[in-house]
Length: 301
Image (cartoon, rainbow, N blue to C red):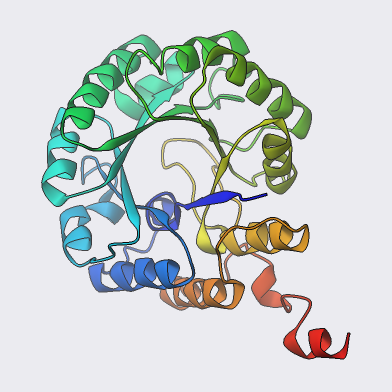
């Protein structure tokens, strides 16, 4: 089975770090990920620099990238952000609608209905400009302010993705409260209300992220988000922690016979750059051991 991994480290990974990474290092990070086989990379976000200063150099990062075989993506929340993204030449925009009103208001300044209306307008303009659109449903499995999220709200948003001309629906476990059973149930239900491809975004906050990824694939998801080193989180969600790690996910998938197009040693080089830049170990585990089987062990078999 071929599994598409969407690399989100340069955006969702770096946005929650206290360290503001230089533009040159961000460009090098993206290039290393591309060299490791990443073909869809969420490079940055076009949001207010005062809200997310770590990504204030979005235009400069994209200007420094010339990767014809890579689809570059960016998070966009409003018309101004879309205009910036279009001018910068992104291939794809990620439009987020949070499934709970309180979190939506804190994240985007409007409730879920208002965010969905905005997403509809943005999607139409993006498609007119030849830009691919992903509709991400944030806090799809739980909200840090309201608690449990009614799956019916998620299904309603997913069903409306066709109407806004999205190319893909992404279910995001923004605060890491999903479990495999809930993932399986929701992904299957979403597939019943839309024929669009389903992608999933998991955080490993409570150590269920990788099990959730496998459950999503078994239920029919075709793409998974992951972040090099397992870094990341949402600046507007209390105690948010990192994404599932690209190298750990790819290793497990490869071990089970799936194909991702990723090169594990090359992914580890990307994570090494992140660790040097941030001055600490990342949550990912593969770099702390060896990507079994090692070449020597393979030769002996």
